[in-house]
Image (cartoon, rainbow, N blue to C red; front, side):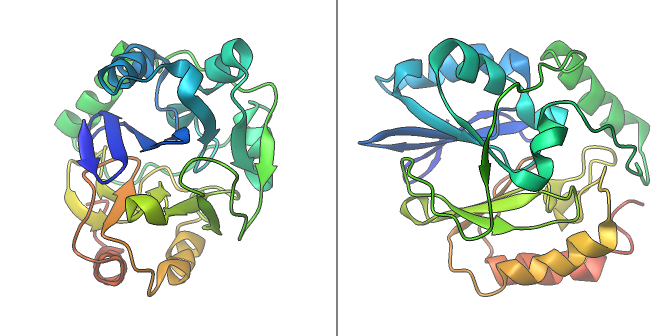
Length: 241
């Protein structure tokens, strides 16, 4: 589904995968769940492209609901998978975490867990090789994505600024749909390792000029990056209720 200039999405507001599409090829931002593979190939075919046009995957962090088909692309198609060095071990399944869930509403949590299960989320294929990135790197991939450190949700969480798509991909540094409560709008994301650090990291998005702020869960936000940050800070104490 096209959601912006050079920008397409597969999945949905529960778990999303984004494609930056240019004449040079396709960059995949996060890899969702393994069951999104069929949607990936269908979306590429609708664009007159194929998996052979994917030049790289950029992971906003190393959690299982963002790894999805990344190893399949790397192993079977030679597509490099880029992840921050601080989350490299996490993406290889070498680090186990127990972040706080926070508040839960049964219906919303059931929808998230049910969707994840249907899309293969009960079994994670971890990466065996990664290409490590760091803050400020501009990657040699379609759209020239730039890496912005956003530690907090995980040590190696990043945002990815892609000017050609007029978008900042925030991963789980924030959310616009809390998957455990169903609450909509910019707010802190659940399953965060260090909530205070995650809030502090929002300063790194300040004054970025982009039409869309794109989370890994929830609808893209077109109300301005600074306004999203303001709302997140204002609701930080109530987002999990």
